[in-house]
Image (cartoon, rainbow, N blue to C red; front, side):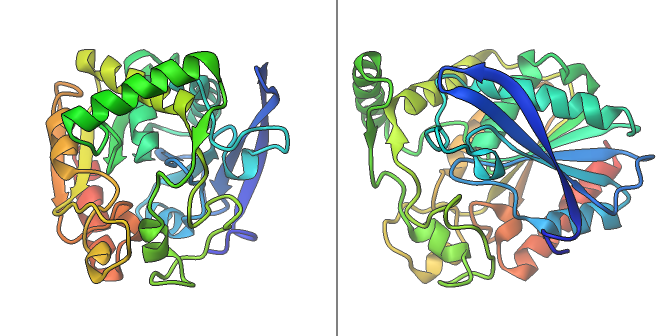
Amino acid sequence: MDLNTNFTTETINLNPDYEGEVIAVLIASKLNTNNRKSVLYIHGYVDYFFHSHYAEQFNANNLDFYALDLRKYGRSLLPHQHPNYCKNLKEYYEEISFAIRKIKISSTGVYLLAHSTGGLTTSCYMNEGKERHHIDGLILNSPFLDFNQSKIEKCASLFASRVISKYANYAKINGVLSPAYAQSIHKDYYGEWDFNLNWKPIKGFPTYFKWVVAIANAQKSLEQSNIQVPVLVMYSSGSLKTSKFSKAAMSNDIVLNNDDIKRVGKTLGSDVSLMKIENAQHDIFLSPKAVRTEAFKRMFSWLSTH
């Protein structure tokens, strides 16, 4: 499916925040029938919706497909805003709630599918979001449930982030994200996917200390998680920390640690299924074809029983 011709976009005007005007963008497949169950996709950090093959798969499996570009990401990023910046992940609840309300009007059920930081945000939303009771299930694709650091590193970085961000809202650091992951998926490097490098740069955006604190607070809140719907937690069979691309980047999660995902993921609610995907990359559904095909198959099998 072509992003320019096979999808519609709707700009959502949100309440102004500390940076001024705020929007989000709701994307919908033109193959939606508006009389069946739907899935709403939420992207990760330094990311936006470009995954047209997601829509193909869901439409072919009798589900309508929608996606959000959250505020300050992708199509929703405005010139006066700091890319991907937030002070609290609850800021995203407004557009998620809007999208759910809109989708449920013409759907017989709604599922959330979220990747990485989107997985953290939606996990929090499913504990306290206004429209969470309209969601039938939560699918997490390599969710960002903990920092990929040792306890000492995590304590030190969080302490520094809290102190610095208290006095400087936009204090930041460059080069935190390794370019290896983006290189492993972009067609101009080692992958097969095309995406807008202004919205998803190979080297990422600067990481704001205030954002680090927001992530840590959200992760901490999940210690009391009690999600009331079935949850599917998908993760790669391998994880690897690397600053440079290597062949191993094509068959491992090189962003997060799969042990963290399993450890926290199983505590999110009373009905959690853990699903290991062999040789998957960080975004499981951007992995090489054989891997993602198997992942889609197993995910739809889970959906058929939930």
